[in-house]
Every structure is written in structure tokens, then in C-alpha cells.
Length: 229
Picture (cartoon, rainbow, N blue to C red):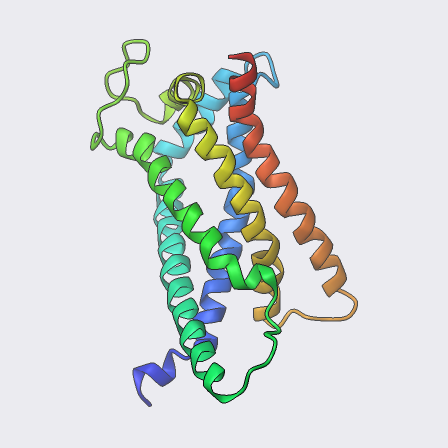
């Protein structure tokens, strides 16, 4: 059996779905920490700093970070491969018969929402992860020369308060993420064969709610600083 046959289209779809569901779970955890940037409690800044410090020093989290990066790479690479294969197959079908495509609007354009999210991740890593690693010079924030995880509160507040372009990109990107999640959430369960007349409607409802609530939760952070400074 050749490698191409072994790593079939179905295998790629299943792997992409599993990586996607892992990232969906991560989004909830990440949002739970990020919300402490907002004044939701009296000691929200200290709680955010403590959580960020734990995330940056605990060895289990360090392993999780590697898994997370791997999941992102797998999801992105296989997502592009599957999309290119779909385009190629669609082009061949056009020569055979002209018929209305049964693919949904979301599935047809999910690659473009994914590209927008990927561009945002590049900017986000540049402003946080690369600064932590010392690959990018940090802005002058309260005389913090080399920001680490425990300084991410000051860094986030600085960006959302002083860099309007970053805030706008952040908001727009999470709108695209919501569109991406609306299709991806349901598609992942379908790919894994978790379809049932009793459960599928519930999965669809949960997916719709998730794709609205999670992006809004993230967008609240820059919006707060854009409004209240």
C-alpha cells in the first residue's frame, strides 16, 4: 500500500477534525484567562498575571503548548491540502456536467476565513509570543524590558489602548473566527461519524451558540479599552 493510499482523504479529514476540536477546547480555556484582563473582579490583574505565570512555567502546560502548536500546524496544513484537492476535483467535474453545487456557503468559503485567522495568529504571535522569546523588541511598558507571561496584562492593555489597528484587526478576525466555527464545529462531528437524528440537532445548536458566544467574549476585551481607554 502506497503512502498516498494509506493517508487517504478520509484520514486527512479525520485528523483535521480532531485537531480542530482540540483547538475549539483551547479557545474556551484561553478566553477564560483573557477575560481577567477586564475588571470583572477587584483583583483581576493579579489573577490574570498568576494564571499567565502558571501557563508559562508549569511543565505540563509547556507540553500542552507543543501539542497546541502541533494541532495548529496539522489543522492548517491539512486544511489547505483538502481545499486544494476539492478545488481540483470541482474543476474536473465542471467538464463532465454542469449542475448546482450542493456545498454550503460556509464550506465553500471556510478556507478564506481560515486564511484571515492565520494572518491574525501571525500578528498575535508577533506581539506576544515572539516578544516573550526575545525575537521582537518590546514596546516601552512601565520599564519592562523583557516581558514574560506575567507581564502580558500590561502588554495587552498597551496594545488595545494605543494600537487601534491591532484592536480593529482583533475584532474583525474574531468575526471571521465565528463564521469559521459555525461550519467547523458541526463539520468536525460529522467527519468523525457522530451523526444521529437525536444528537445532530443538539450539536448544531451548540455549534451555533459556541460560534457566537466565544468570539463575542474575545471581542469584548478590545472593545472595552476602545470605549473606556
